[in-house]
Length: 185
Image 1 (cartoon, rainbow, N blue to C red):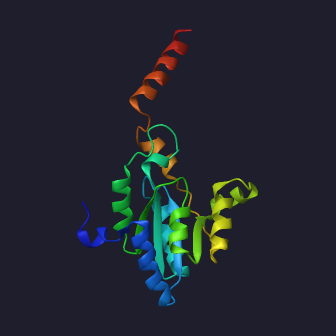
Image 2: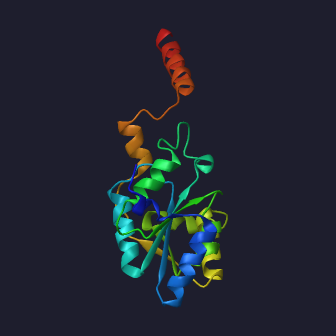
Image 3: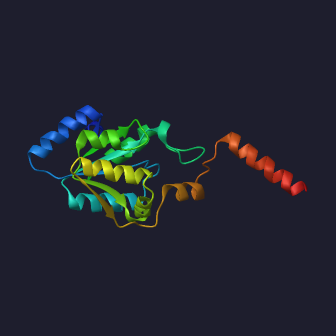
């Protein structure tokens, strides 16, 4: 459990909106990062550091467990832990949970000056139906900009697959049965 002073960084949409309005009256630049953050790694920290360099207030929103679609057994770590991990980072000012597929509710609540994504996702803008294309349209309609940070070659999915057993028992049983059947042939 993280200390109460850090847990105070975790806000609902309405409370977060009120906090951000105060910062905007002080002419502070709001920066918004969004993701699952299933396992915090150097790539995330790198992105947060770069985001903080272009703004004053860093808001990180996390995908609710119910909306994570990274495959079976994901998220590996529940949203309560993921929220606590992000809140414990000194450079993060606020953390919010997204109770929808994308960052849009939080984005509308805070109207960020910059919405941050890693450079390795930029190719998704080629698909007008991608989530990133929708993010770009919304942030620009709110007066902000989409900004890409340099990416480090780390991804939670790859790390979890390599070092943790991420498949639920039922999936493991199906996989093992298929492997056994192939070996018998």
